[in-house]
Length: 499
Length: 84
Image 1 (cartoon, chains in turn blue, brown):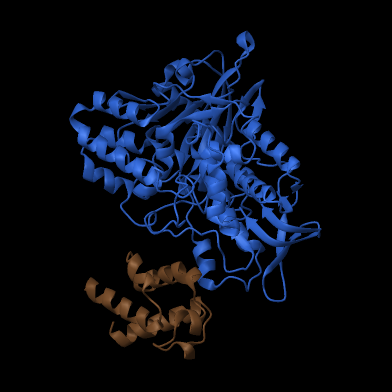
Image 2 (tube, chains in turn green, red):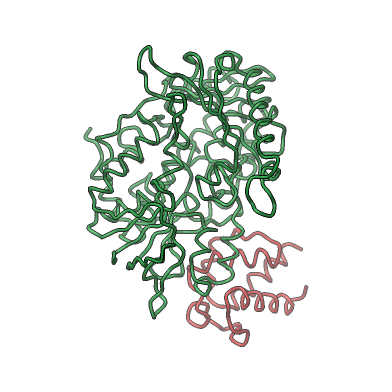
């Protein structure tokens, strides 16, 4: 078996990378360890209700926006049906003490107006924040397709942190908490994330908010169709165990667990950087780079509830709820008790079958690494003896917390399934079961697409950003490094919708 | 820490972390041509120096201007002086 390129990891980054390369006429093999592509976002069905596990909504999918262009470029658009979120409230911020609700409308202008109405004394802070977010977001490569130099620079690694930025703007705790609530979407606390990285994610949602009919499962199925059409050879259920090097030390292939060698000129690895180190021959990377990859910090993990409900939940139709026990924007991902932690609630399902419609929700409560420890047996790294008990306890605490904050939702619960950080670990193949893999935080230099091993390139959210947009963008950045950014950017521009 | 101690720590740290021969670590050594440290190694050099000297390097422009091992010595000595 001989290919131009191999791609390791069949998640969104890997499928995107494989499709881009195949579109250029290159022969591509995509290797996924799980029996199915994109196991993290395929979701599952319980009692007839579909629960999305990795893709709830995205920014950047409005017509002509980055994700929309990526979908068009890869041939995914025609089969996808966008589901717009509520224009007057795609996300609701609910503070318990003091009781306070803020509804995020769609689009910068509406968001600005809403903030002006609710915080009339904070117009300057609101203007400064929103302008800075928009400017930063539009300076991101592949968001801005006219950038001549594609480089992340130091701005995302150095300050200011989001917290420092907001502390300079205002003393209003509620306002700062609302500005920073989308930390949930990348899993890093405001005192650790750079303002730039916050803006890169939040900025996309401030422009437009969409889901996809059928969710992550549908997205995966459409990817699979296109991969087949493009002639990408997909290896499912195959673990990569090693890399082959040519006599001059360049990448020349992969070894799979069953002993198969897959020869190729080049490779894009989209797996967790720690896992990459397990398959790259020892002599390839220098100690400094190995330490850097090994020491990359992970985002927080989470306890996730999947609830089947007796009837529709009005507040979750085209809208999500962010619960904050108090307006403390430093409470993200700290070792606080469940009832003191923020929570994110989104609707399950998404298909409306009239009277037969099933209803439910997904609630996500962040957990720190420290809080995850009792779940794991320190020797075997498998589930500890107390695992089941602890899981039940967490599940009960989350239900109690939802009862306190959203009684109208809690009273409809008829069935609960709980996922722990270990569930996430097993599905995402990440060492600790973090929600979003490697952190993007101040002072941490995440790996770039180019590596010291000739022919080996990196993509995946560790290199760029989390979410569908971050994952897809990482594929474009890695492939742009191989094919030329100018060429890819030009081809993307040609996909812009007319008008 | 005097200047010579700083220089020695830089040389041994870089030699270990980038698998270089300590005898090649002379001030005039050009990073790219003599030590094989190219743009791909820049970020790792920054991290290694940050760890060794417990400071944060934010001078992106200054880092780009570094071409020889002697430039690194001077950069770190200057930065240590600034911190005192």
